[in-house]
Length: 323
Image 1 (tube, rainbow, N blue to C red):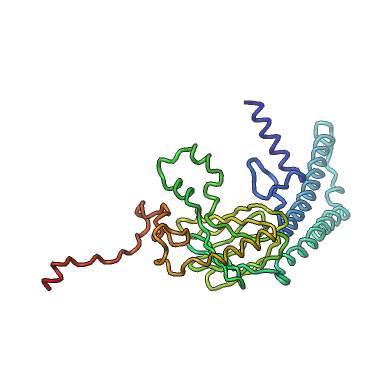
Image 2: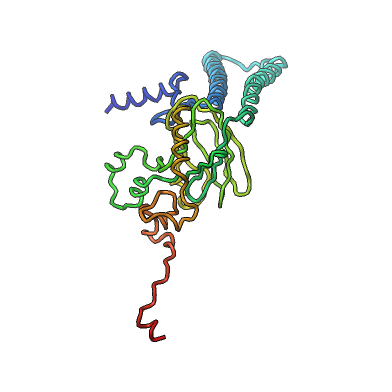
């Protein structure tokens, strides 16, 4: 037991070190923030580490001085207060000027990086993100490609089944963090996002990208990213948007530019899902509302959402003839 606890604390200490903060997504027992996989995320990490180092240095100096003063000038050794020290003009100037200098050292690079985070010029592609209760719609502007992304069916089944066991959840490592259709983007490409919502306020947030942006109905917000490393990066809606807020994950799949070109060509060749949900085939295609797509284990079974409207049944033949 003690060995297990020691190993846990050892991992926690390593995660707090600068060289250990490399993970894009949070890991168990991680104390420090990760570097992320974009320039914006790494800028945020650099600003964080600069502030952390300065704060730790100030804390060390203050506590060492306090410990020395309490030990060296304790009353039991006959020490008396030095009024000239506590009312020294030079000291007053020093502990006013030094913090100002430190703030300027932190503010100048932070301001430059903050301005760069909002510079969407020279983007190579644009993706429109629309938040909908409770899913995301992605439109690749200029390409004619549109996908809808929502909680994957296995997670949805597990969360709604009262008999779900811990073993089943452990067997699904991305439980509540996986989707049916991830957002596929190329690496080493400056991507501009225009973000809005269809109904209520949402917030599009993938920690590895280093930023979050509110999705507000009637308003278009902008952001950009340039992912440096291929991989799968997960996030969630970060704004309380209704009863299924906790089941609105985001998955970004970053691939090479050649693989992205192939994926985009395949999407164009396959065509888009029908705009009218009533035209969804009987077995469902993962893009219709839950009450219409029969393959989705939905809240209709729990009596929390109204079922899809049913067409009226035909009148009996004898009744028609009687009329």
